[in-house]
Every structure is written in C-alpha cells, then in structure tokens.
Length: 314
Image (cartoon, rainbow, N blue to C red; front, side, top):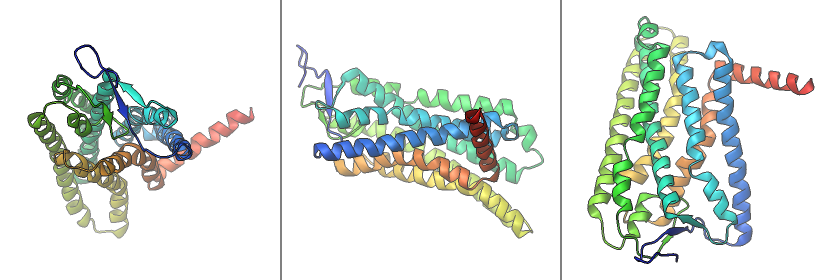
C-alpha cells in the first residue's frame, strides 16, 4: 500500500475479476472485442446521421448524441479495465480514481437526461404532429441537448468533493473494476452515513424524476396510438417508440438495482455484474436495437457501407 506521511492513501488497487492469468487474458480479448464493436456500432450511427440529410431531424439528432454519449461513457471505464486485466499491480492513483468516478457518473447522468428528452420528442411527434415542427426545431433540440450535458456535469462535483475529504488511511483495495461510491465509502477510515445517504438520495431523485417523466410521456403516446384507426398506423407508431422503450428498460432497470438503495450491504459480485451490464453491455447492444428496428437508419448504414466499399476499391 502506498501512503503519504500523513497516512493518507495515494493510490487504490482495483481487484477487477480475480482469476487465473489465462482467464484474465481471455477476458481481455472478449472485452476488447466488445469495446471495439461498441465504438464501431455507435460511431456508425453518428456518421450515418451526419452524412445522410434525410436524418437531419430532431429524432435522429438525439439518437446521434445518444450514440456519441455511449462512446464517451465506455471510455471512462473500459480502457482502464482492459489495462488491469494485463497488469500485475492493478493500481490507479487517488486523483485518477475520483476523475473516473466523476466522469462516469456525469456521463451516466447525461444519459438519464437524454432518454426523457427522446421520450418527449416522440410524444410531440405522435401526440402533437401538426405543432411538432414548430415546437421541436433543430435549434431548440440542440439547446436542450446542451442543457442535458451541462446540467449532468454539475450534479456530482459537490458530493465527490466531500468523499475526497474523507480519511483514506488503508486498506486501499477496491473489490471492483471501477471507482464506485459504494466500495470507496467502505474504505473510509471513519463511517460516512450522511454522505452515503445524500448520494443515494441524489441518485434516486435523478432516476425517479426522469423515469416517471418517460413513463408519463409514453402513457400519453400509448393513449394516442390506441386512438389511431388503422392497424398500420398503430404499428408504425409502436415501432418508432419500441426501440427507445427497450433501451430505457435496460438502462433504468440496472440503475435502480445499483444506485437507489444504499450500497453498503450489497455484495461485491452483484455490484460488478450490474455495473458491467450497464457500462459495457448496454452500449454494445443499443446500436443493434436502434438500427434493426428502423428502416431509415438501416438505409443510411447501407449507404455508408456502399460508400466505404467504393472508396476502398478506388
């Protein structure tokens, strides 16, 4: 353990997934492939929206921002996890640990703000179709996206600052693959139930307010869709919202398991599995969910594929 003269921890050890060297290498290969596929899938959606003028609408602008966010999000956790698979020491500095904590939580909070914005966009498109172009203009859409990012990055500096002021005098081993508040608070030399409770309340407020906003938006959408006389019209409306609902279910389901209840009594294995699910697996499957159910997106991706083949042949 590396400590300073005032007996303060200057680095942490991330245990990640303790197993044999061979299994560590196998995990490194598996998660490296998953990481590359996630970047490629989400990057393809960003480029498709940027290059295809038919997709220059608020709905696809939000989708492109969501995919860009997913690319940023996995870069806060996965590269360090991959490094630890091959590292003997598995250390991370005190500053780097809390920077990872801040950026991963800020990105996750941005996602909890973007998903309600996407639900609101679908509500306007389906329930207020005549007013939709006027209300949800491109300018307003980008301003709302910017507001989501800025607000999310302002949510956690204060709680994280108070956690950094706790005395960490040892041990310095975190039974996790990321710097998460639960394991960090468990390493504090003095109990901090107030900080743990405040983090839990803040996370709960963010999750529940945005979740119920999405729930309310889709309740109104469902009521409007059921009034559509034609079956084809109802199918089109449901297909437009279906992908988003699947993503919302995956994301909010794991968040509620992880962050709403106090983290002190939660087994480390469950924390790792749930964190792995929403930090690595959902960004991987989100491009598939959105592209497979969307004809315009599939057409744009095929167009990019053709352009790539033509440029390679030249």
